[in-house]
Image (cartoon, rainbow, N blue to C red; front, side, top):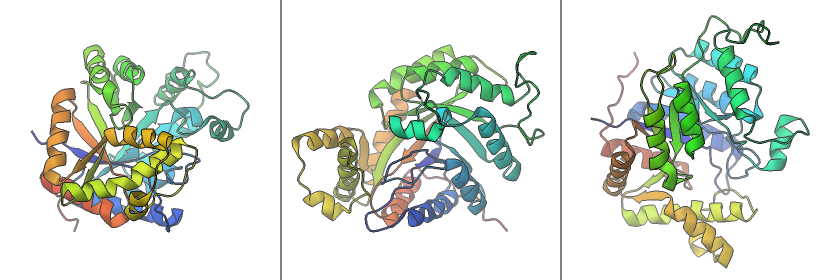
Amino acid sequence: MAIPLSVLDLSPVDSGSTGAQALRNTIELARQADKLGYTRYWLAEHHNTVSLVSSAPEIMIGHVAEATTHIRVGSGGIMLPNHAPLKVAETFRVLEALHPGRIDLGIGRAPGTDRITALALRGTNGTPGADEFPELLAELLAFTGGQFPERHPFRTVKATPNDVDLPPIWLLGSSDYSAQAAAQLGLGFAFAHHINPVAAVPAIKLYRDTFTPSVYLKEPHIILATSAICAETDERAEYLASSMRLTWARMQSGKSAPIPSPEEASAYHYNPLELVHMQSYRARQMLGSAATVKARLLELIEQTGANELMITTLIYGHENRVRSYELLAEAFELQQPPVAR
């Protein structure tokens, strides 16, 4: 059976380039993914990170959907603690109305940023965190079909356009918390293997074993998101991977900066703490030639039983990212959609 491949895009900013160019690159990469036969194109939410400009996925979803024809477009994800559930419901109903049958709503429970930035996003002095996530998620689901209790103050509030269904909802996570929540609610589950590879197998097993069919989904469905870099040779992929390793080491040391070129990264002298961060990040990457990466990804599917793979590729140079996704599409023999007439 063919394994559907999808894209998770964080809109990386290359050294010497600009945020505006990074956003244009996202739209261009989405066009290419659409032509290559990828199933989904999800946009992440991150804040206060100089190397990434994925701060407004709801805006980029509209632009990407407008620029493409076949591929599903969604959030990977909307970080619910940063948003009012009503606003999320209305935003995604508008997107679904404009692009029917092509929108996904991926929901995360982390703020996607540091503590201070999370406070700034919320516009309140309250303590941000995941503790309120169950309540926020319940509120979002209630707005989908007037499901508030009779005396709830929001019972009369309609998420408009109220004649449009909310797109399919996916819970995102890197632990068993979201796996269990997605299973109990009968929602799709997207696991972030690139963040926590060790927890992938037990979290996915928990989700499958405890899944309850619902009006949203009849059977469990798992998307496994992972980091992969594909190049013509293993050596070339290793060289390209050096850029994000340095970026990660800098971020963990509080030194956020645009993604350096492989030349700069290869010449960099890591201090002992940066070296630890770099090696930790290296262990989470899958990289090499198309044959090498395909073999590792198929092994991952075998281990986890995931239904789909979602690939994030963070490397310097837009042309290198496009080429990596092209090589993966060829290796997995993705079927290109018919050309629109």
